[in-house]
Image 1 (cartoon, rainbow, N blue to C red):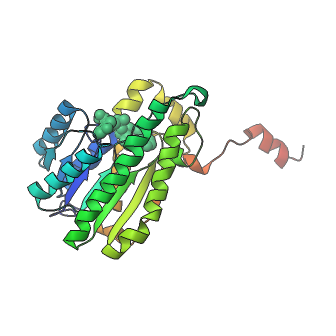
Image 2 (cartoon, rainbow, N blue to C red):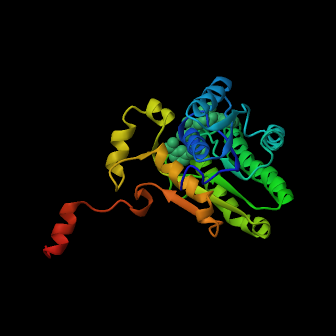
Image 3 (spheres, rainbow, N blue to C red):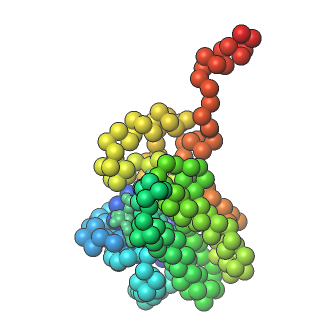
Length: 267
Ligand SMILES: NC(=O)c1ccc[n+]([C@@H]2O[C@H](COP(=O)([O-])OP(=O)(O)OC[C@H]3O[C@@H](n4cnc5c(N)ncnc54)[C@H](O)[C@@H]3O)[C@@H](O)[C@H]2O)c1
């Protein structure tokens, strides 16, 4: 991929004021796309967009709630008005509300579902309506998680939404393929972001120990996978979930080294 890979393309990335979304928006823009950058936080949105422009990209901040359908429709319409169309959408915004299953509240469940599921679903729908009208295909990417495949304590609600997004990508192949629109998901494993580092100072050390490749992902690792899945290089890939986790989902807890030494020596 080069500076020109996304030349002439218009992209929307939600939840991109920081973390994974910001890195995706930055890389897309520095490789030629005009990017509409969304975040719930006003200041963060404009600062992030300004930073990308400062680096030489084309980027416009559009703050608001990526879980609100009316807002989503306005965001897509504005991207079309200002940039002339829409070719790539990345439903990256997602929230994690940890909680004991036995005391998890309807309000918390609703909040997680609203952004993670409804927000992603209606961004895909609104963008696909526009892409269908344009008649030249497009790419939709939704941000799942390894928790959509593996159980994690206190994450039942979040995990359900992330599994749902993998199925959304698979299911929409039927309705989007006739229009040349691809849809895929990324399932990141533990990733170093402002949020994960600030909520757990031991995050990097813990996940370095648990991850077969010996370290958690950086936002650039997830962004590289994202850019591939919305680039022409992946035009025949759709309905898939790409796991980017340093090997974490490939292993299950296994007996310690002593056990294998005993088995091998026949003790
Ligand atoms: N960081 C990880 O380890 C990890 C692992 C697996 C999956 N993910 C997923 O990747 C995505 C990005 O993760 P992250 O850690 O970079 O995100 P994050 O938690 O750092 O949030 C990124 C931005 O989203 C914004 N946001 C929150 N609610 C919003 C809303 N309603 N509308 C618009 N923006 C909103 C926040 O203001 C924040 O700036 C999420 O969907 C997350 O579930 C992250």
